[in-house]
Each structure stands twice: as C-alpha cells, then as structure tokens.
Amino acid sequence: MVSRHSLGTARRALFFVLFNLVFCQVEHSWAASFHISPFRIFLSAKTPNAVLTLRNESSEMLHFQLRVFAWDESPKGQPLLSATEDIVFFPLQLVLAPGEERKARLGRTVPVDSSEKTYRLFVDQLPPPEKARGSQHESGFQHESEVRMMARVTIPIFIQPNKQVTEGRVEEMAMRKGLFSFQIKNTGNIHFLPQDIRISGFGVAGEAIFERKLNGWYVLAGGLRVYELDLSKEDCFRIKALAVELKAANLTVKDRFHIPPGACGQ
Image 1 (tube, rainbow, N blue to C red):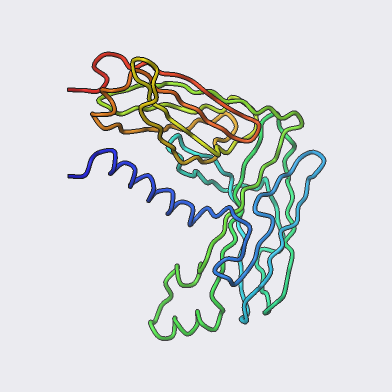
Image 2: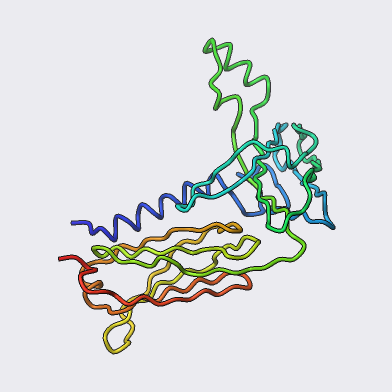
C-alpha cells in the first residue's frame, strides 16, 4: 500500500518537472537546435535596456515570436501572467538561417519603483510557413498548437529598485493530522530563489529523527509561498519538534515548530 507521504512526494516531483519544462531557466541549447542568452534579464535606473541573443545551431531555418507578460506567483507556486506595456521589445518575430545569430532589444517604459517589478519574456519557436500551409491543406484547418508553438523558453525580467533589500521569514507553521504546513514570506523588496529548503524532525532528547528536502521556486517581492510535508504516522509520533531552514543567495531563514498534542491524528 502506497503511503500518503509517497503519493505527495510523487505529485510534487511531477509538478516541478512539468512546470520547469515550461519555465526553462537554464542557458543552453534548446533540443540542440537553438541557443538563447541571457537566461535572466535585470533592468534598473542605470540599465533601462537589454539585449537578448538567439543563435540557430541547427541546419534548418528557424522562426520565433516574442511576447512579454507581467508576472506574479500564487501562494502555491502557480504563475500568474497578465498583459503589460511596461516592457517594449523589437523585433516581435525573428527568422534565423542555419548558424545565424540575431539580437532582440528590449527596454522598460515605466520608472523604477521602490519594489521590484517582475515579467516573463516568452520565446516561442514557430513551424516554418510552408509546413503550416501544408498542414492546413491536408486537414482543411490548422491546430493552434501546430501553428503557434514548437518549443518555448521563458525568461524572467526584473526591474530592480535602487535600494535592494533581501529579507524573508517563516510564517503560519501548523500540523494537522500529520500534515505539516508553513509559509515562506518575502519581506524584502526583491525576489529570492530558494536553493535549499530543509525540514528536520527532532525527538524528545533533541536527537535527529529525519530530514526532508523540498523543491524551491521564486518568491517574489512582497509575496509568499505555501509548503506542505505529509509525515508518516511513525515519523510524526516520534518527533517533538520540526525545524525549517531555507537558504538562498544572501539569505538564510530558520524557524522551529513544537508539535502540539493531537497534531498527528489518531
């Protein structure tokens, strides 16, 4: 019989695999056919513009379209995208011959604020026009997925404040029927990206019982992220306290939670 902990771990692992397929953050060749850099863009009062470089590393002509959205995150880590005119870019579409490299230029149209503004630049690979026409001719119509996108890379854009503060804390720790939940709150004015989130369980004498690692994702300025850990009954009844530790660049957040009576259920 599969435990709740195993199912929960599997679901979370599957979510992050699928999510990262869409929100790619690494600077490398996509499917060995094209290369994009940089993989993150930072704008500021001193840097109002930036350049994105695309290189065709395939033997075929490649077509791309660019779009930009304002970007926020839900407490569960789901991306919230909305139309924006804060970022302008040119060109809107690119066609690259084999081995060709081209640049797209972008810039901010809004002033720098006291808190970081965040966006996502979508780079969608499009099928060649002749293939799209062939698909339409054969089927009588074109599917949107066939015409609009083959591969997608999304690049975060940050408009950073003049004075940057990286701060965070652990909030709302609770245990109900063996399910431990807590929030990571960004109390600073710029984002942070957790590199390591550890939850450690300790026994009556302070001895270490277990340690779990959770996947991290962007916590944007002023935002929060909800995390959950489903404990087995065996582990839950053995521990008396849980410690949460988050590490990100220039930030370490720690807190401790003492297990109240009845928190593990029956």
